[in-house]
Length: 161
Image 1: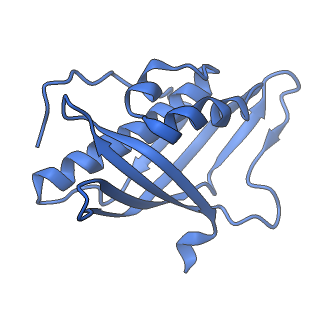
Image 2: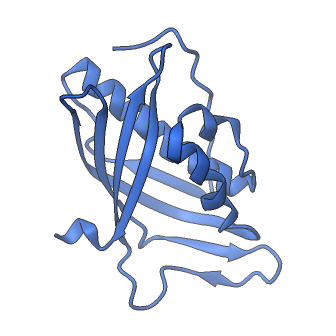
Protein backbone atom coordinates (compact mmCIF):
# COMPACT_ATOMS: atom_id res chain seq x y z
CA UNK A 1 0.00 0.00 0.00
CA UNK A 2 1.94 2.98 -1.27
CA UNK A 3 1.41 6.66 -0.96
CA UNK A 4 1.78 9.81 -2.98
CA UNK A 5 4.65 11.05 -0.80
CA UNK A 6 8.02 11.14 -2.51
CA UNK A 7 10.40 9.40 -0.15
CA UNK A 8 13.93 10.76 0.27
CA UNK A 9 16.85 8.86 -1.24
CA UNK A 10 19.03 7.44 1.52
CA UNK A 11 22.60 6.56 0.61
CA UNK A 12 25.04 4.75 2.86
CA UNK A 13 28.76 4.78 2.05
CA UNK A 14 30.56 1.62 0.94
CA UNK A 15 32.34 1.57 4.31
CA UNK A 16 29.07 0.76 6.12
CA UNK A 17 26.38 -1.73 5.17
CA UNK A 18 23.00 -2.61 6.63
CA UNK A 19 21.81 -6.01 5.40
CA UNK A 20 18.08 -6.56 5.84
CA UNK A 21 17.04 -10.22 5.96
CA UNK A 22 13.43 -11.38 5.70
CA UNK A 23 11.92 -7.92 5.26
CA UNK A 24 9.07 -9.05 3.01
CA UNK A 25 5.39 -9.60 3.67
CA UNK A 26 2.61 -10.67 1.31
CA UNK A 27 0.22 -8.09 2.85
CA UNK A 28 0.82 -4.75 1.04
CA UNK A 29 -0.05 -2.67 4.12
CA UNK A 30 2.37 -4.61 6.33
CA UNK A 31 5.01 -4.39 3.59
CA UNK A 32 4.66 -0.60 3.52
CA UNK A 33 5.29 -0.53 7.30
CA UNK A 34 8.37 -2.71 6.79
CA UNK A 35 9.63 -0.45 3.97
CA UNK A 36 9.20 2.79 5.91
CA UNK A 37 10.58 1.24 9.11
CA UNK A 38 13.64 0.05 7.20
CA UNK A 39 14.17 3.47 5.66
CA UNK A 40 13.89 5.11 9.07
CA UNK A 41 16.73 2.93 10.40
CA UNK A 42 18.81 3.54 7.26
CA UNK A 43 18.17 7.30 7.61
CA UNK A 44 19.44 7.11 11.21
CA UNK A 45 22.65 5.44 10.11
CA UNK A 46 23.07 8.00 7.31
CA UNK A 47 22.56 10.88 9.78
CA UNK A 48 25.17 9.42 12.13
CA UNK A 49 27.67 8.95 9.30
CA UNK A 50 27.05 12.51 8.04
CA UNK A 51 27.22 13.87 11.59
CA UNK A 52 23.91 15.62 10.99
CA UNK A 53 21.44 15.42 13.92
CA UNK A 54 18.94 17.47 11.88
CA UNK A 55 19.01 15.12 8.88
CA UNK A 56 15.95 15.61 6.69
CA UNK A 57 15.49 11.91 5.86
CA UNK A 58 15.49 10.96 9.53
CA UNK A 59 12.92 13.69 10.22
CA UNK A 60 10.81 12.53 7.26
CA UNK A 61 10.39 9.04 8.76
CA UNK A 62 9.97 10.21 12.39
CA UNK A 63 7.21 11.84 14.40
CA UNK A 64 6.29 12.49 18.03
CA UNK A 65 8.80 11.11 20.57
CA UNK A 66 11.04 9.53 17.90
CA UNK A 67 11.35 12.91 16.17
CA UNK A 68 12.41 14.54 19.46
CA UNK A 69 14.90 11.83 20.44
CA UNK A 70 16.54 11.27 17.02
CA UNK A 71 18.94 14.24 17.17
CA UNK A 72 20.16 13.18 20.62
CA UNK A 73 20.79 9.64 19.35
CA UNK A 74 22.79 10.98 16.39
CA UNK A 75 24.77 13.34 18.65
CA UNK A 76 25.98 10.40 20.79
CA UNK A 77 28.11 9.42 17.78
CA UNK A 78 29.72 12.88 17.40
CA UNK A 79 33.34 12.48 16.30
CA UNK A 80 32.83 8.84 15.39
CA UNK A 81 32.55 7.21 11.98
CA UNK A 82 30.40 4.07 11.56
CA UNK A 83 32.17 1.27 9.69
CA UNK A 84 31.53 -2.38 8.88
CA UNK A 85 28.11 -3.93 8.62
CA UNK A 86 25.02 -4.70 10.60
CA UNK A 87 22.54 -7.48 9.99
CA UNK A 88 18.90 -6.48 10.51
CA UNK A 89 16.67 -9.53 10.81
CA UNK A 90 13.60 -11.21 12.33
CA UNK A 91 11.14 -8.40 11.63
CA UNK A 92 7.75 -8.85 13.26
CA UNK A 93 5.08 -6.46 12.01
CA UNK A 94 1.38 -6.00 12.66
CA UNK A 95 -1.27 -3.32 12.83
CA UNK A 96 -2.83 -2.72 16.23
CA UNK A 97 -6.58 -2.51 16.86
CA UNK A 98 -6.05 1.27 17.15
CA UNK A 99 -4.56 1.39 13.64
CA UNK A 100 -0.90 2.06 14.38
CA UNK A 101 1.91 -0.12 13.12
CA UNK A 102 4.08 -2.17 15.44
CA UNK A 103 7.49 -3.29 14.19
CA UNK A 104 10.03 -5.31 16.18
CA UNK A 105 13.36 -6.37 14.69
CA UNK A 106 16.86 -7.40 15.66
CA UNK A 107 20.17 -5.77 14.75
CA UNK A 108 23.40 -7.76 14.98
CA UNK A 109 26.20 -5.24 15.51
CA UNK A 110 28.99 -7.85 15.85
CA UNK A 111 30.62 -6.80 12.56
CA UNK A 112 30.14 -3.04 13.00
CA UNK A 113 32.49 -0.63 14.69
CA UNK A 114 33.23 3.04 15.18
CA UNK A 115 36.41 4.91 14.35
CA UNK A 116 37.25 8.06 16.26
CA UNK A 117 37.70 10.70 13.55
CA UNK A 118 40.28 12.59 15.63
CA UNK A 119 42.42 9.77 17.04
CA UNK A 120 41.72 6.98 14.55
CA UNK A 121 40.96 4.59 17.43
CA UNK A 122 38.63 1.76 16.39
CA UNK A 123 36.09 0.23 18.76
CA UNK A 124 33.49 -2.50 18.36
CA UNK A 125 30.79 -3.54 20.79
CA UNK A 126 32.23 -3.04 24.29
CA UNK A 127 33.44 -6.20 26.01
CA UNK A 128 30.62 -7.81 27.93
CA UNK A 129 27.88 -6.10 25.89
CA UNK A 130 25.67 -8.24 23.69
CA UNK A 131 26.02 -7.19 20.02
CA UNK A 132 22.38 -8.16 19.40
CA UNK A 133 19.91 -5.31 19.88
CA UNK A 134 16.15 -5.64 19.67
CA UNK A 135 14.28 -2.61 18.37
CA UNK A 136 10.61 -2.13 19.29
CA UNK A 137 8.97 0.62 17.28
CA UNK A 138 5.53 2.11 16.86
CA UNK A 139 4.54 3.79 13.60
CA UNK A 140 1.68 6.05 12.66
CA UNK A 141 0.50 6.70 9.13
CA UNK A 142 0.78 10.34 8.03
CA UNK A 143 -1.86 12.08 5.90
CA UNK A 144 0.22 11.42 2.79
CA UNK A 145 0.64 7.71 3.56
CA UNK A 146 4.09 7.55 5.15
CA UNK A 147 4.48 5.20 8.11
CA UNK A 148 6.44 7.40 10.51
CA UNK A 149 8.14 5.99 13.59
CA UNK A 150 6.69 7.60 16.70
CA UNK A 151 8.51 5.63 19.43
CA UNK A 152 11.66 3.53 19.54
CA UNK A 153 12.75 1.27 22.37
CA UNK A 154 15.88 -0.82 22.25
CA UNK A 155 17.06 -3.69 24.38
CA UNK A 156 20.62 -4.94 24.10
CA UNK A 157 20.45 -8.74 24.24
CA UNK A 158 16.67 -8.66 23.62
CA UNK A 159 16.99 -10.82 20.52
CA UNK A 160 18.14 -13.82 22.49
CA UNK A 161 14.95 -14.11 24.56
